Length: 445
Image (cartoon, rainbow, N blue to C red; front, side, top):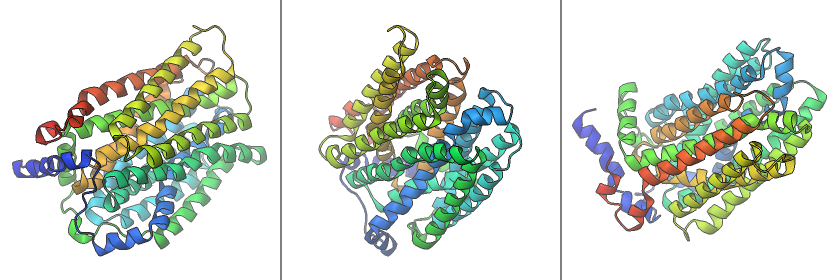
């Protein structure tokens, strides 16, 4: 990257550090586009909530059907779990493309293209005759679905800053949190009337409806004067500049590792709850929904009560501490340290772990994006790609010892929690900025 470009990228990050840490909004003069979008705040919230809800819908409606897919396609559990890994990997890699595209061409066009491809890929998943073909089109489904994830975060960064942005992320968690609550319930009910393919038919219909809503109601939030010129090379240079900021990278890795602990639960829980503890798909769906309620409630406590009263770093630290303790308890239970444990204590540990994500995920997103107003699409892509790639690595690990033990799930969760805490403490160094040292030296790579 040219030296001047590198300095410009780092300058944008460092010049705002002190102001952002205090949570003060730092918008420049609002453009007419941004002003109009803010006036339709509730509508924008619902549309962005729908976009952020699409990934958990795509993943969680399918979860109760995993054991059925294993039998229907005559594939081992580890292979069927790769359908989750493929979708997650696609969502990760797709964000690297869509994020910079949205910085160059605006938010609407890449989003609509991605939604159309998502609908087509999902329809083909419903017809897949083999596990290999299902894995391939789940990858394409993830690549296309990435548009909604990355652009939703970028739109939030276009419209809000500081404490406002942290609160908006918590509000989005309320809306998108409904998806993992209802998704496995819907999936379980679908399986009462049809087979696993019916889940993908329903997802196809949801994708069509959301595409129409986006086309009708989501206006462009990135005016032409704020768009970036240049191609792939420029996008890579921008991302390199972002990653050179130690604190941004710290929040990105912290959020990604916390998400991996969450995804270890998502990937393993159908087998743990149904195969190991003998619960029905409907019971699994109910437990999954209860855990999601915990995440939503804690997310709202974060947005409504803590943001503005407690520093984002302190709330984030609390969340990481609880996740670490819950993962440790699950590891001790599943390895037999407490003797034979039933479903109830394991479900309680998973509930605590899931709920603590309501403190961790919105605050890592907010802290990272507040440092990158000049490249929200690229920054959002890096956040999402890191989370989904680490999650994709965690997914097959939870099934490495087969379908009849929960130990790998707990060990993966504990490992991710420990690494997330290490990244937060060594890279973000929240105590330095708390002491007021959030100037250029605190943000140097």
